[in-house]
Image 1 (spheres, helix red, strand yellow):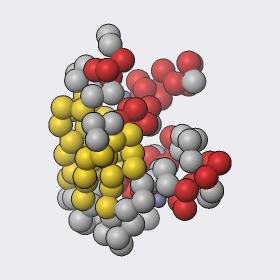
Image 2: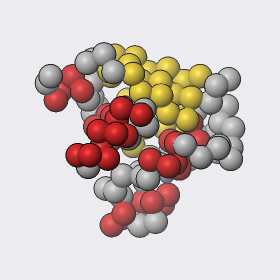
Image 3: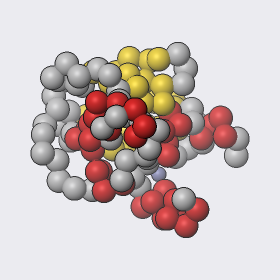
Image 4: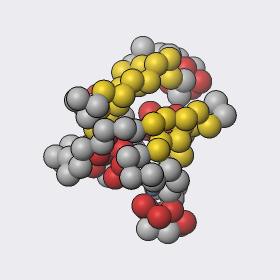
Length: 119
Ligand SMILES: [Zn+2]
Ligand SMILES: [Zn+2]
């Protein structure tokens, strides 16, 4: 399996009712993230507590804990072909989520198990 396919989305769907974002990947994998988890995982320096923290991956727990907020109007904008920018209801737009990072954060049981062993 090529690394490219693993990090290439074919479809990105925001479901406000379910409070979920789903990414279909070119290799057939499907990732579903809670919106609130994605917000907690915002990679910008402000959310991550400083520039030195920016590269770090969030704790997978962010997707497992119950959401504190409902997000009703999340907007997504492509950044080149390597990332998307999320613009949240409150106007926060500093987070640029690379496809690589999103795939790495996939909270599905098989990915969590994979990274538990290989991480
Ligand atoms: Zn942020
Ligand atoms: Zn997964």
